[in-house]
Length: 162
Image (tube, rainbow, N blue to C red; front, side, top):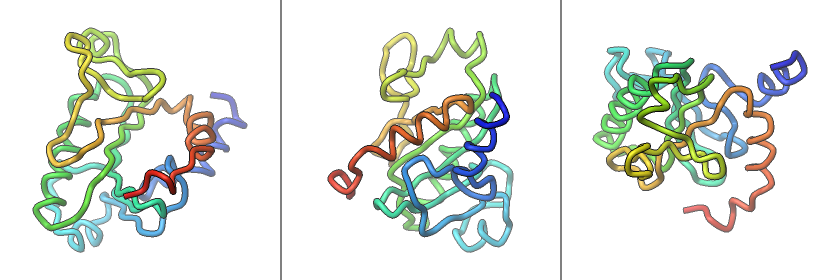
């Protein structure tokens, strides 16, 4: 990632909450903030995702950020977070992992669909789902964030909002 790309990504992300993948956010929780965890009724046990937010297009997203070789941990943290949120009557419509890359070991088990960004099981080609969330888990790579955000912002979310 060159310097310009870094600053473009930095401008569209909030590392105290969620990446602005689906547009503007009107409610945001930094899940590393104990006050936000308490407000949401989440356990302060480090088994939670990094962010939870509401986009103005009505998406409620849980986000986890990782490097490489951490997909399993990311999925466990997202699953724990979604479970606790839904137990506390909070809505989750989308789950996202922002990461550097899949490791070679992870590539033997998973792949990311380049068009839909779905995390899929390599053997069955099925999208990975978190219980209680209709949409499959999406993975976005750090080096592609600027392009992906620009593409997604061009989509008419108003026609698909819930």
